[in-house]
Length: 440
Image (cartoon, rainbow, N blue to C red; front, top):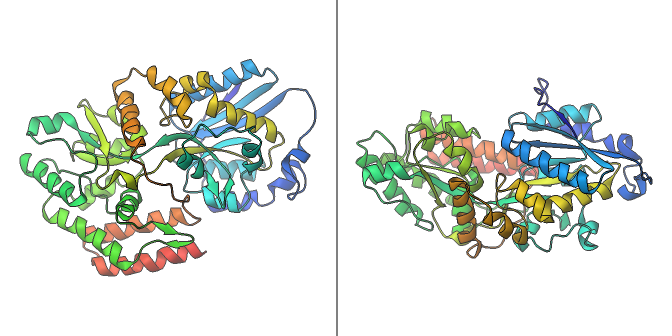
């Protein structure tokens, strides 16, 4: 296995360039774009080298490389060329590789781009391999398997399962004499709880991060009321619902349950070190459950983990991230076999642990859970286990344009928080621009 150290992305490279660069790659990578991938695969028994690319930190890299080495031990003619880096600039790096005609055979993506990559035929359609059991997804929760499907085609396999979670500072709440939040508490009760924390701290710490621009929180809030974030290629909600959401957090701000707009904007990123629950500015923040161990690294206080406010049935078996194969790979059958190994092999599952979240296969998950010793990781396992029986049905993955909708929601929430715009004006603008982005 040859590892390539992370390299800085080239300036000016973006997701659009990646998509454009990939447009002609199937011709270069293995024949006519309309041909069946296996018809293009060379038939030989010689050595095979597959390129693999993912984002994450050193711990994820160490575990992933070890799992791939195990595959090579069992399949000696297959070797891997691996590349990894942090999430920032990851899709830019994919664009760089695409421009050079060097798209990885196997790469990690998330639901932000899943539908778009599938519709543009960038990723390999895995449906036939699922049908003939070469890719065995029978051990995945039905909702988790569905969350890798676009237009009823399996185009990706969950690398692990996660859930939207409320991460709170357990030691701080103990010092303040305030009870811990609990899974399933109503949203308005949660706002009241957060205001109580602020008062108990004498205003030194706010009760909660303001999630008005957090699409995860909005999505679960909508599902708790029988709605959805999306309906096909349109927003699944209207002005009235979003206005109610924004007004809920205006009430929270009026009760000083949330910190200043400047602090919220600072934390409204994917940088976990800036989350207000670890910087000491709030008692609670919103995160993915599998991120708890990394968040714990940034504070000496003990952190706790519960579900977001509202009905747990609003949640579903959600992929933390996916493995996808490039449609132009010269070795589709081998890539699928590696995918199957990473998903169903118990030894590989034990190596990968819960760093990406709970193992996608429930059978493998049970073996892995027994070996977890880290306290924060134990909480991740316990959270997932407790939530499993309460989950609702999985929606379709977000449609093309989801990344733009996320950015528009953050901008709308910031404009309301800062007072630059009223809630009604921000809501109307978001609805119009959001639907336009989805229609492109």
